[in-house]
Length: 112
Image 1 (tube, helix red, strand yellow):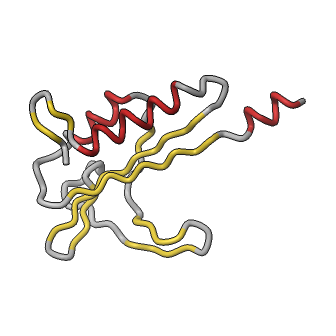
Image 2: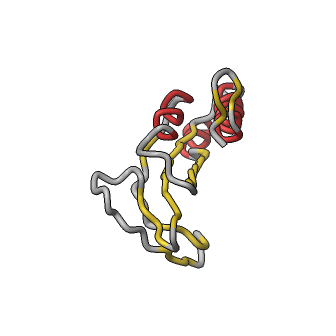
């Protein structure tokens, strides 16, 4: 998933594509948030939490759908995502959740 040496993994390539898309649209404002969790032995642990034993609850919301209550970090660069991917030890199952939001206020101001 993370690759090795000069070969990028799936997560790194996806992050590069996301930031290439953002760079291709300089007139738009994007907000990216990331959470990073470990799933092991039917337990979900937050890898971005200050507590090493931070357990994560799974919730369901009619608007958001199914989500986990993990710490979210603002990410503004590809290097920022790479830093998150290298957080913590090497758990067997990692899940990186990226939320990319197009800021509509930029369009509203543009039209006024």
